[in-house]
Image 1 (cartoon, one colour):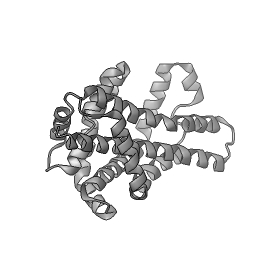
Image 2 (cartoon, one colour):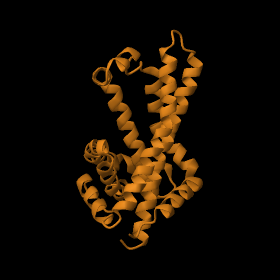
Image 3 (cartoon, helix red, strand yellow):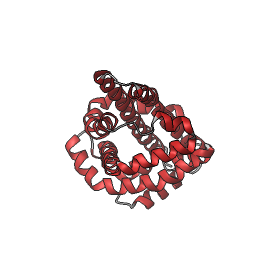
Image 4 (tube, one colour):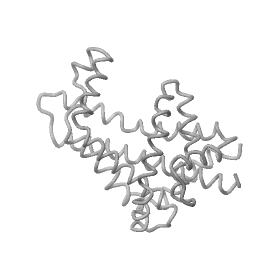
Length: 241
């Protein structure tokens, strides 16, 4: 194993400390604002009655909700992927937000496709935990490779990531687990949001603050995932893997 988990995490923290201003300038409009708007403006996805009835009823209500607001979900997902492309591009073109966003426009479609190709089997694998972590871990370098290496397709970048992480499966799976677990930081705010909305007349200011905190936590988790991927990519590159 050539990849040190502690070294990658330390490097990711160092990148945040150095580049926080740039990361916020890219992340705020594309990671935070769309999520905040979705949380604040859309109704409760699953009613309390459906949630209490059964798991199947809750899933049916969730599917119906997504179907009713599909365009909003697609628009938010597209903006999120563009923001992620911009963050990866920052570490390919240097500390220039405008140049990074221009590169993101070229990178965006392939990153979206790669997200689907990795995300679907990865999320299915998470039902068994370890297979999902392995999928996300072995594909961890896909974003940095799309942004930093000679033009390659989404499938080609995934294949390169799998090859590059050969021999480091345990390390990259652990890093994927860290990146995914950071996203749980938004869960308490989501639960508070659901509780507030279950009240007859929730305080709109309190709701706005809670939703802002949840969207902020979610955005920071996405940034953390990018930094972990970039740090891992650089760590393997410096080791000659």
